[in-house]
Amino acid sequence: MSDILDIRGFRIHRGFLDRPAQESLVATLREVLRAAPLVQPVTPRGRPMSVRMSAAGRFGWITDRNGYRYSETHPDGMAWPPIPDEVLAIWDTVAPEARAPECCLINWYGEGARMGLHQDRDEGDFTQPVVSVSLGDEGLFRMGNEERGGKTESLWLRSGDVVVMGGEARLRHHGVDRIRFGSSTLLPQGGRINLTLRVVT
Image (cartoon, rainbow, N blue to C red):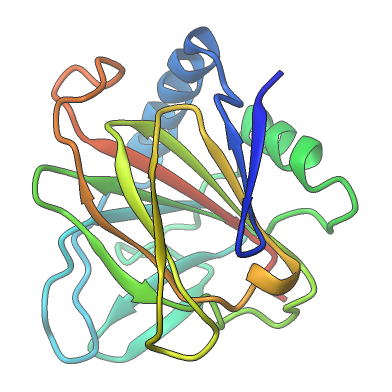
């Protein structure tokens, strides 16, 4: 049974996935990424992001010079693969009242990668939570406010942790300041995988 922390409405399930479950999930994600390879996206201003991205589900979230948006196709043109059952099972456990997720964003953080403070607001229904799954190296997760600025709190997310962003946390700014590269042995070459599950429509 995992411990649950509540910080600013972010519900953090510590150690939700044990090591065998993490290893199984990584193997499953390798299959997903064979069908929908990771890409290094650019922001609308043309700046490369430090994370590499892919997705599963009806939609993927993409960014390029045309803007941030959800798309039913990978940048290479193919449909996204379905969200794996073991990922859906996590959602069903931590967000049982929510609708089924339509997007599982897959972010890979290599050494030096980060994700600036942002809100998830490209979705149509903010009553539905966002669920985040951490695998691999530890990431320093920063939790802020609905308005940009002000005091924030940070916590190192470890491999197997699951965060539910619903209710008061749904539109709070959040990000990953850095990772502790090599802090986990889950991924042979190091790095961090973050899955973000969302209801899009």
